[in-house]
Amino acid sequence: MYFLMMMLMIFFIISLILMMFSTIISKKMIYNREKSSAFECGFDPKSMARLPFSLHFFLITVIFLIFDIEIALIFPMIPSFNLVNFKSWMKISFFFMIMLLMGLYHEWNQNMLNWIN
Image 1 (cartoon, rainbow, N blue to C red):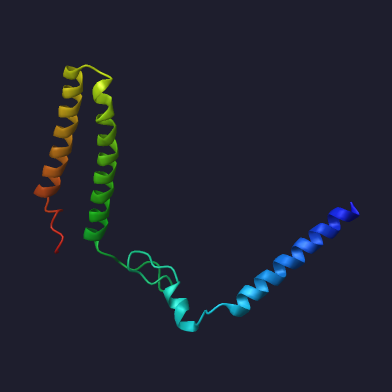
Image 2 (image 1 turned 90 degrees about the horizontal axis):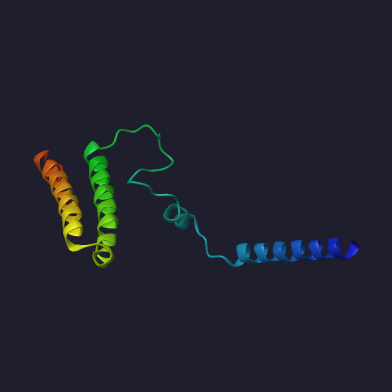
């Protein structure tokens, strides 16, 4: 038990010395604190949390997530080509692509793909 306590004390002292040493030799300056602060969606984290933001920015983010999930669903279709017969694979692929194109047409029809506004 005494040996275990001594080893824990030695580990604690060594880690304390290493942390103090890294703090002393680090090159952190005041102007670097701003660079290493959290940056999320163009907002200053130190300001008020309930600032209004552009709904268009939010909808573009949702569209990106939807397309990202669509791509993740399309990738397994390629290796599954050899596992099932051609007719059922074509029906499933065609149905999936039609659903994606209908979603894209709806987003285009609602002017959500205009990135300038």
